[in-house]
Amino acid sequence: MDFRRHFSGKVIIVTGASSGIGLAAAKLFGAAGARVVMASRSLEKMQALSREVSPSPENVLCVRCDVSIEADCRRLIEETVARFGRIDILVNNAGVSMRATIRDLDLSVLRRLMDVNYWGTVYCTKYALPYLLESRGQVVGVVSVAGYAALPARSGYSASKHAVRGFLDALRMEHLRDGLGVLVFAPGYTASNVRNAALLADGTPQGETPLDENRLMSAEKCASYLALALARRRSEMILTPLGKATVAFHHVLPRLTDRLTCRFIAREKDSPVK
Image (cartoon, rainbow, N blue to C red):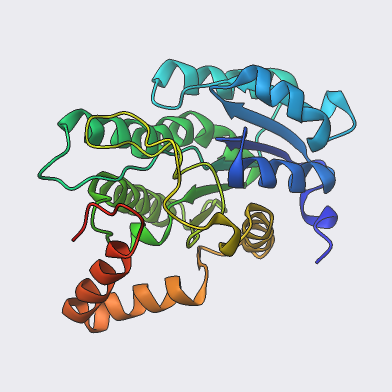
């Protein structure tokens, strides 16, 4: 699909834009002629990567933003509007994962995941909403399949992604007549830095991935699906055959799905699930 006719000239904010799906999406939107706002905690990294997003510096704005901080999210929206005058699409992609059982983890891990994954989405969406309504734009939440069917040793991650999905589904219903597009986007396992940065039971990053990242969907392919869902103004997209099957069987055969999911997670290297 030629994405230029859908995104050229649009102002698109992407949180978590310094790596993974966020960076791949920023590059895709930039190549399609959009004006891209890159947001993450790593300002210098984003600035170095901004030339890969667009050859025209005036079309890229990099904003240091910790989405768990409400003031940062408000400033992100204010700087976007001050620079470009509008907002057409907000991609809530910033997130953090975890890898520990509830029995072992410190409660601060759960709070951190809710602060980043859920409240980060709420803060950015709340402050961007007036401008998105004015442009009849779109808001996206990247929730993962864990936002539909929970994963063991990912309790905080699953809970936060379920919360994001509930928040966005309610937002969609509240604005059915306003022209606001609300997309719940659920990738399956995608190659990214998220597993390296996943928090262990004590809140420290695990520092390495337990999966073979080369066998996972690339961030670029995932970003292309995201762009397709936006171009078609979809309200939901669940990726990968495994992801779709997990969601479907979770509703039809929940106990069987629980057992199969536990077996799958238990096969990970050094899995907390036995």
